[in-house]
Length: 213
Image 1 (cartoon, rainbow, N blue to C red):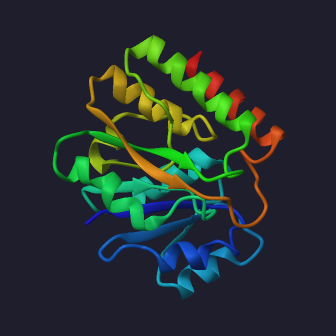
Image 2 (cartoon, rainbow, N blue to C red; image 1 turned 90 degrees about the vertical axis):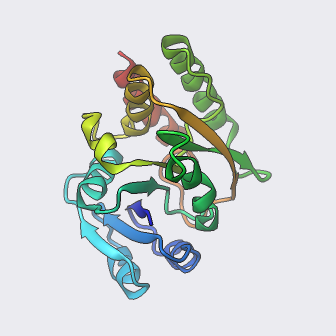
């Protein structure tokens, strides 16, 4: 069964809900990226494997988790309770069934869950990705699944917010079969640090723009 990589920075409020809803057989690996709110201890108390990653950055945390994982198939998801872990089996299924090499959760947001500025930037990045690769995506979803060894072989270099885009870009260029699966998207728990703020969205666009360049 898959390992689930959960990059975490100060998600003490959301962690219990996320970990309690982890499907049976899916092993959570919480990568603590310098939390100051006790997130690591909370994750350990809820049965997760906890890996500290001192290098700050979303991609650094994802890479550390990918390196530490042992399952043949791995999943990634945000740990702010916007995504429901109970939907992980649906996202992982195309990869487990060897129908796809990379599966992305296409977010279907509830009201007010996905700010307009974040949704627009995501749409523009997906459009540019399609122009460059011919892969038509509607969302660069943060819930995703792929094979661990092949993901490592992609050689993803970004260690910030460009990590998710670089993964899809390199996978598309290698001819991977990429499938999208609808997933629900909820209002987050706790303070948003990225797409919930204009500053966070701008930082993400900057990092992803660097990947495209």
